[in-house]
Length: 137
Image (cartoon, rainbow, N blue to C red; front, side, top):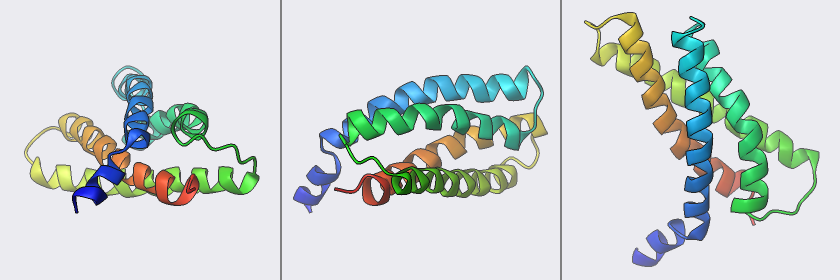
């Protein structure tokens, strides 16, 4: 069990975390500005986070995190599908859960917290998908 945890929390994991920090800072700024400043919808605001972050994430994770030299459209399609599935799953679960827990709060409070919860779930789902499916060695 200890070896299994050590394998999961290897250098690749920590590189993924570092890339994630960069993506999170940029994407979160885009998402909350879109929602709170531009007054775009929950779905457009949260999706804008992943359009911007995914482009940076693909290149940083491919070459820095997973050190993958493969050049194929198939891998790019897998990456795009992984991001899409993780996004829809994470935010699709976060919104109703947070709305249920915070049913007495304003829509703005519910949506902002839903976006934070969705971000956390997305990170977990995305790491597993990229490591196990997209950039698998």
